[in-house]
Image 1 (spheres, rainbow, N blue to C red):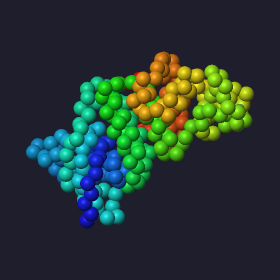
Image 2: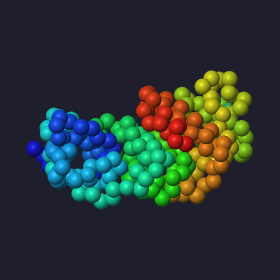
Image 3: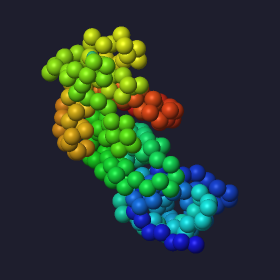
Image 4: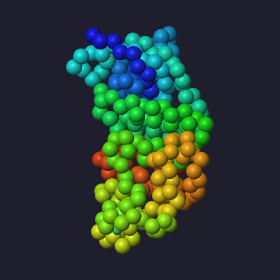
Length: 249
Ligand SMILES: [Zn+2]
């Protein structure tokens, strides 16, 4: 029975039987891993509340060969991200980030880039409860999983979009469509010049830089709608937290 040690973020959890918990993790080395915490709900559990949502820790687990459910041996907390549970806005956005990260890979499919993106986003979310951070996370995650939105050329006529020109995003085509070509992309969603500028800088800079980019209302809403449709299109199912996030924003 192989023993693995890896950094891991708790991305959910539910009860099993009388005293156990099943914890899904997003791990640095092995992608998404589900493991049982034996006796986690007992009063004197050795886990003592460490397996809470968002917690980053060092996970040691036994891998059961040919099974998707493994056994936690040890979990030592590195950062509990307790600030994310302090208010509804952070809790909602944090829950959305972990769900989106979890939905982006299959179990046992390693993706260190997504792990690091999630870790950085949770760290920043404690300090800045900003919708811009979530939008930046979304566009960067889409790129990592292979859905790179074209943000410079019209995907129908291939012309480069002039600075400040009106345009739209077609989720099925995967990016920009110029005004002239809108009839040829029936699923087009108008995108404001400001939202487009934000997307471009979010892709080129880091998460932290995108917090410095201004994106006033109503462009935040415009971008949220556009990315929601792109994510739904790409992931092929509507994520549960998308509805929740709409409520808290
Ligand atoms: Zn065009």
